[in-house]
Image (cartoon, rainbow, N blue to C red; front, side, top):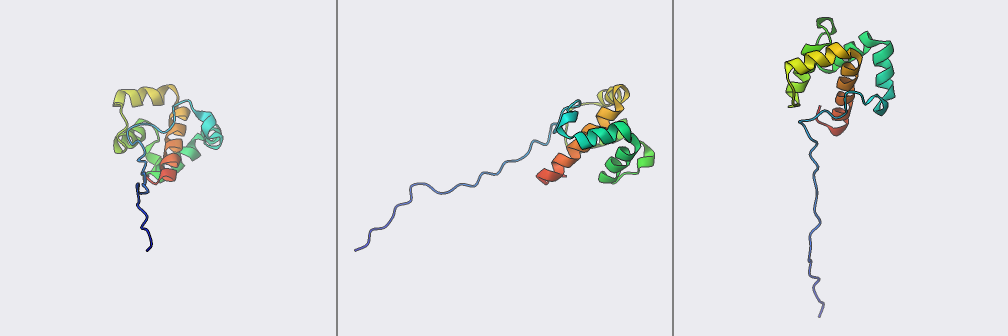
Length: 112
């Protein structure tokens, strides 16, 4: 007579949910995506139009505080309008590069 195998544990599927409520990269994390950083420094307007297109916005409306605030609100990233204002005021290229890096990373994770 054949013996039956007893299964002691079942295979488990672990689903990792990306964190929605944080920026995927820091503001000054330019080394994580040099291509975006160089585009932001040498062709700020081109990068602004890319980000606007990614967000289905018009790049003629500006790429500053409003765009950052809309993105932050959409993904539940903590912050406020004053913080967005000062971030864009003090380092507009870094702010725009952070947006583009975040969009790229969220696309890779399938949540953009």
